[in-house]
Length: 98
Image (cartoon, rainbow, N blue to C red):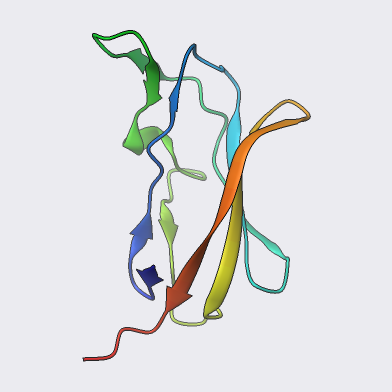
């Protein structure tokens, strides 16, 4: 669950670096609202897998921020390499109520 005003970041771990891959996010209506710049910076962890740095997950140096005018509901995301969707999923966005 995410709330309006929060920033979304992914923890991408893969067996090898997928240079040029990207992350895409669609709103509850199916509109593409965010796509990361191509992911060219990967770091290998000591135990072998590779990760994408959080600061590398931006669009024109802008993070994925859930702004007030964005709809609440279920969003979908995909981690894409070329024409292949490597992994994807869904998450919810809501308005924080105290």
